[in-house]
Picture 1 (cartoon, helix red, strand yellow):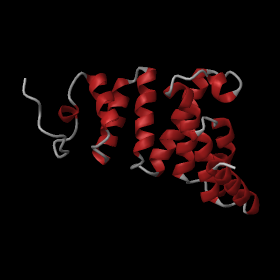
Picture 2: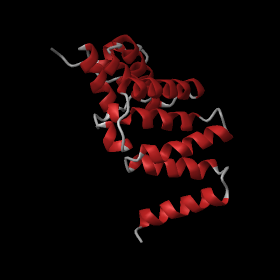
Picture 3: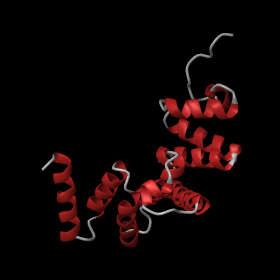
Amino acid sequence: MTERRALYEQLKKAVADDPKDIDARISLAAMYMEDSKPAEAMPHYDEVLNIDPENAEAFLGLGLAWGRAILENIPPTDLWDKDHDEEEMLEKAIDFLERAVELDPEVTQALNALGRLYMVQGQEEEAVEMFRQSLILDQSQHDVLEDLGELTGKPAWQILEKDVYMGEPEEE
């Protein structure tokens, strides 16, 4: 048995032994997400929210699960074994991610995913704001810097707050 398979079995057993074990459920759901199985992850995130309705990590997981096909340009049938309406997926993803940010304003993964989903919707101002908030929390996110630069056509340091150091401006 592979090490990963053993970890899956260990987490499944932990959940079976204690259905209210939030850490085991979150870990198992995260593994399913890593293996591109959001449909298998979602019941665990849902159960976490039944136990703890204010769990930002579960809202983040659900948002990423619903948004995965859109964010990674994967046909929904590849992830879900059935077709889903893209607009419904987008709305659910945004709702869950917004709730995650409400509960934990410093969860950069949710801010970044929201920024990218807002880009898909053509809501550029909202996308810029999400990326800006994320970069204020963690300036080392080079992929977000690139997204922000593409979106605005300006270097990120010109968009962010003056107290956020983004390096020296390039000379023209």
